Length: 216
Image 1: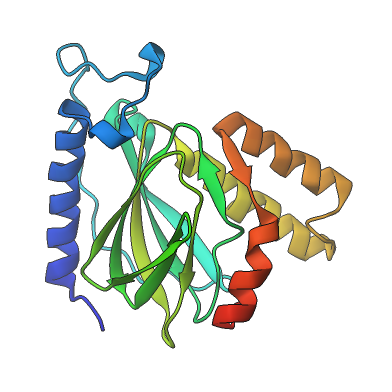
Image 2: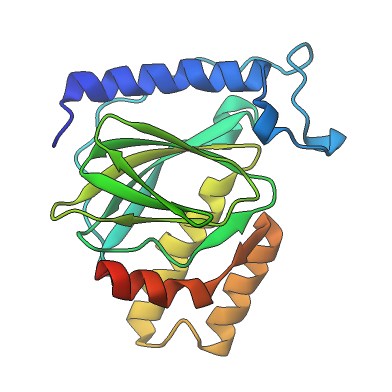
């Protein structure tokens, strides 16, 4: 199932409105107890208007996935950021993990995403939204036979920087040098990123999902 360009533009407009609402009226389930990260609608500086022109479809990377940043956290005065991602059929987006401070809002453009949320698996079809609040172990995979294209919005953190470091620096280096992600140098860089962005991974949960759903 595909969403046409009009629907894509409408989705971006809806996300902007949704983001504004979240910034002004934080969801109770997403409240951050830390005063340092609270967003005060009365004092938050309004971002400068910007336009995102249409882009060519995002190509699948050599490992079956790819991402690109559409809106940077700096463009919205740290209120939110937005990326586009693509996953090949039966591809899982890393290991199950949780975020200490990040809330994620996903909109599926094409295909069907399966999302592990705690112990529950949720199907998210094209045209659907899904919110992944902080503190819940989760992972996304492409459960269909066509490419999965989605837009992810990130609140409370410049998570696009984490993904760009992984996808645009570490993965290309691993491929170029023909080494493993378990290489001490690479593992250390990833661990430092995980700590900086408050991620905890649960790789022991991956194998059961891979075997049950035929993933890679």
